[in-house]
Amino acid sequence: DLVKSHLMYAVREEVEVLKEQIKELVEKNNQLEQENNLLKTLASPEQLAQFQAQLQTSNSPAASSQAQGAALPPSQAAPQNSGPPA
Figure 1 (cartoon, helix red, strand yellow):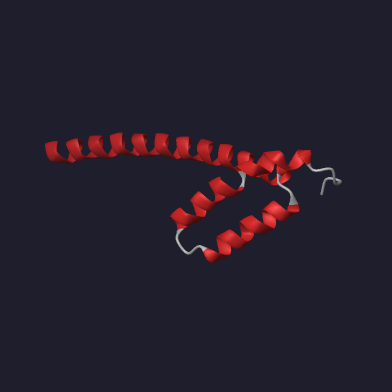
Figure 2 (spheres, rainbow, N blue to C red):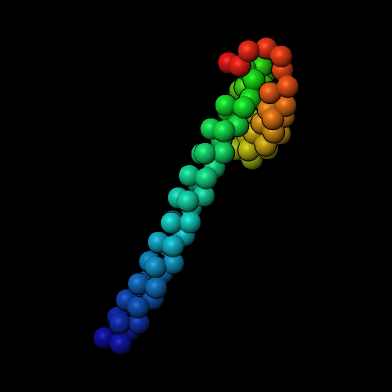
């Protein structure tokens, strides 16, 4: 009975830790989705097409995340274009 109560305590403690991690991950995911949407709106169609091409040519998830980081920040230069916004 003592072993069972210790195990139950450990499980409850682990569940609380996991719930907190899930909460943090959901918040981080929402933040990243908002940032992604903002970057998409700021990027020019040419930059989006270039980024899509990079995603299609990369096979590993690490390369995809690196390509995203490298391809999207130049989108901040998009407002300098004299053409109409897309």
